[in-house]
Amino acid sequence: MKSFLALVCLLAAHAAIADESDVSLKDAPGREAVHASCLACHSADYILMHASFLDEKGWRASVSKMIDVMGAPITPEQAQVIVRYLAVNYGAPKD
Picture 1 (cartoon, helix red, strand yellow):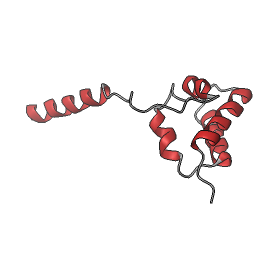
Picture 2: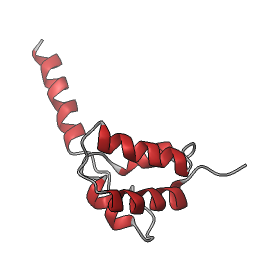
Picture 3: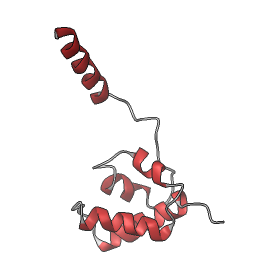
């Protein structure tokens, strides 16, 4: 039992110090707004995971959900900047 508990503690410690520094967002207008507003709650991985299927409408819905459901303190002006950045740099490819 002690070895199992030690393993759980070791895994939890490893997760706590995981380095996500290799994931960075594209340097473009709006990046700072995304860093300040979005990455305060989740990693850049979340953005990259959704980039393959969210277009501008999808990013707008996602940002709205973060504001309306999750309570993200983002103004309408900031939301426009964030959505534009995400759509231009991480929008789903058009067919």
